[in-house]
Length: 179
Image 1 (cartoon, helix red, strand yellow):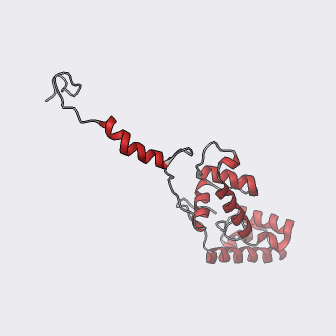
Image 2 (image 1 turned 30 degrees about the horizontal axis):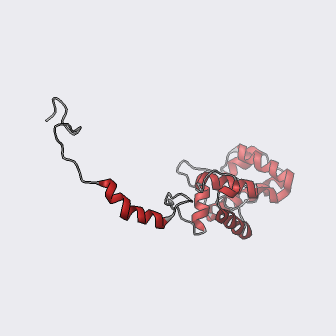
Image 3 (image 1 turned 90 degrees about the vertical axis):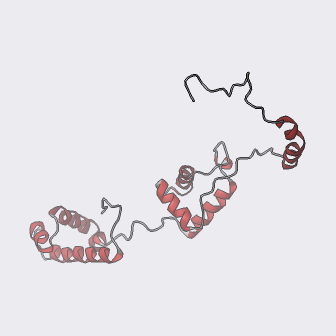
């Protein structure tokens, strides 16, 4: 069950709901009708119909709680594999640059494990396992830091020159009508 506030059931609330479903199963076995069960347990008839169908198909196991929907769906070995694949980089996985985005990681998880996460769920999964968002410095792979330092010290001072003042031919004049 989903709520407008984005919340869900706690484990205690889930256990309470499961007890209600098990009481319904006892009443199914006793031959009671859906309307009577719904009135007694103060639930909707549709819920009772759904529980009865699950009970017929799978027995008592069909009405038991499936657990928290927020639990991680990847095992520890899958997480370890995901981390290895992330360390290999996006280029290896077919993306044109070296940036991991949440959408790309979501797609990678789907490709590797056939499990679907939302972008937000992908972020929570990564954060839970110690990853952080970082904006990488944009530097070319071919960048040579020593050449850059030499250029800054020798070439840039010559190119930079001195600042020009706003003279008669300057484009820094004020526009007509401005003060």
